[in-house]
Amino acid sequence: MIRVTGLEKAFGPLQVLRKADLEIRPGEIVALAGPNASGKTTLLRCILGLVRADAGLIEVCGSPVDAKGAYRSRIGYMPQTASFPRNLTGEDLIAFVGGLRHGPRRADQALLESFHLLGQMQKPLRVLSGGTRQKISAVLAFLFNPDVLIFDEPTAGLDPVSSSVLRDQILAARAAGKTILLTSHTMSEVEEVADRMVFLLEGRINFNGTVSALRDQTGERSLERALATLMRGNEL
Amino acid sequence: MMGRIIGYQMRDVIRGRSVPLFAVVLAALVFLMTELGGEGPRILVSLLNVNLLLVPLVSILFGTLYIYHAWEFIELLLTQPLGRKRLFVGLYIGLVLPLCAAVAIGLGAPFAPAVVRGALPASLLAVFLGTCLLLTAIFVALGFLIALRYDNRLRGLGIALAMWFLFTVVYDGVALFGAFAFRAYPLEKPLIALMMLNPVDLSRVAVLLQTDTSALMGYTGAAFSRALGGVRGLSVSGGVLFLWLCVPFFFAMRRFSRRDF
Image (cartoon, rainbow over all chains, first blue to last red; front, top):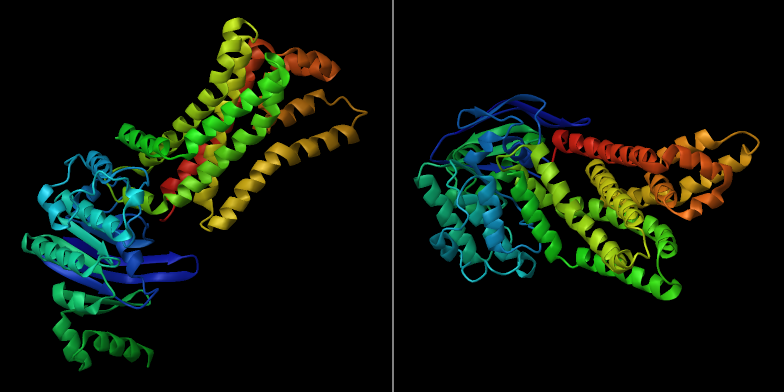
């Protein structure tokens, strides 16, 4: 479970998050949406402990987000860009991160096979394509069986087959009772996997409900148009 | 856990071409100087000035560029269950150790036969290598500090280069100008104090005082010799250089622990 209460963050004079409240329950997928600079990434980074909030409270599986970072053993994170040490192999990388998490030092073969990564893991990461590195990043997120999964634009840079595999893995994780938070600009993906949408605008949570509730509220059938209507409504 | 970070970091750095290439360049430089001018302390003193330019430059650039290049991976590591200070120390040592190994092999190995033949005092080589290793660690820490302070990579690289230029060229010019302008006054003590404020100058004097060259420095040389010569003086130089390592390292670690990523 992720619980965010009264979260505030400013970078200098720029107020990025304003009293954001959010709760994501186990077995739920929440998609974070909003225009550029709405505070999505900052919210994700606050939960991950990369950015320190000015005010408010974040709890992950009942543990407060603090500098010690022990709570992060419950989180699997897939960043938007998979950037790894160039001269390590995929196997090295998994052993490295596995060692830091006191988790497995070798990737689950079935997980690797599902992403068509068998045969790629012995190669230096510098020779792998961006998409392949992104798949390794997905494997790292799932590998340690975390209770909470956070994805930042997970399918950006992935081919359709790999995107589909990743979506299936995300749905399987939901079925296993994982708490999942993701950001995506691909609305079809959000429609397919998300139970709930949280729409951020200028650091405030402007909408928090199901996709169908958003459609009802805006009177639009397409999710993309519904979000655009929500944004325009706030501009007027 | 820190050992694991150091281990994998070293594996990545050593498998890259840059650090082994640095060792080869340093070794080639020693062989070239030996070919041109014989062997022994004279070559080492000639090499000193080249190394006091090259080692800080390569180290500060390695430190700065490493943080910038590894930024996204560092973010990923920060999402793992480990403290920021541990991660910082691991990343720093993982980079400094291979660089120090490159310096020690590149500069030490070619001189080893001269030490064995007795053409070069082992103590002189040890001081020379020791100062080069400390300079490597100091300038990598400065590089880390700059990269963590300035998010703009071009600006950060510019500041790193400016800092190297300040320590290796500008500082000497200013000190020389000051010594000339106030030549009527006894300047030995202020000059020794000025020396302490620049790790490159301090390293140079620490090595020179182990050779006969210091005898040519007249009264100033005698004053330096009193302050920085002998075992006590070497301990003072080593202590000040170690302090020079601790200060940027501490501020870089503090910045790493407190900043938003």
